[in-house]
Image (tube, rainbow, N blue to C red; front, side):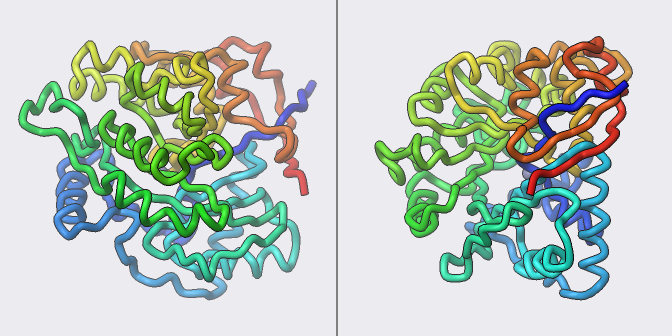
Length: 357
Ligand SMILES: [Zn+2]
């Protein structure tokens, strides 16, 4: 018995870095103090995590081999397409082009270039369904766990602290302008309500009435409020959400936001109800790469071992619409995700992922 359907797509992962064994310079989410110290340092020098220089990646067989294994791993997980949320070295593209020249890749790859290395003269569309540049990734604030996301009001458990804003609306609009003009998609990390507001202001300034056509993205969009949801819908901004985050962050969100704000946070259902286009990405390695794991967490609001977290949920239909795309390929599974109990979704086996060329 098997079932065939739209292939899983991961719209936000950090697979390239993992392929060569590099850690996120922001640090480990399990060490919020370390992450906070890093975000502070970066902010104090008027930089952002997407603009920080990194040790160069050497273009060699180790890089090509590591990337090949990482893409294989994504295909085994059931993915037909993975979007890199911030490529920070051009040698990744060179290595992927070399792999692609030999044969089709194991999964289709889409690349957002980190704002720190983005160069409008160097960026060119490949026209190749297997490997394409799609845009530029900016970074507006920190993270919730480290209390560094930018908030309109202080954190419930840190009454003097409103987090860290790396970019204001003018800076974002000015820096993104050349790329937007050249037709590249703009994607910006924004977790706190203040950061989401600032990014929307920046997009409004940048795109004006053409915003919906440009479909810029907000990555994460966790601390939502009804007015921000409405503005995202009005402007036509796309939300890229993480299926695992509402469950993983449930306790932190209540502590950091307090009951009232937590009520509106991670409300992907509100985004959909308002007509916002929602796509999903794991944020691997922060969360598991396996889409069926994310799907189960998103639909049950429970941890994999069945603990209730009170996290908001989506129906399997709505979750699949954000996580799968027939135009990117097909996945063959041991069962139809719409027909198994929600707490057994992660146990579905991936038989084959067939990216569409
Ligand atoms: Zn990310």
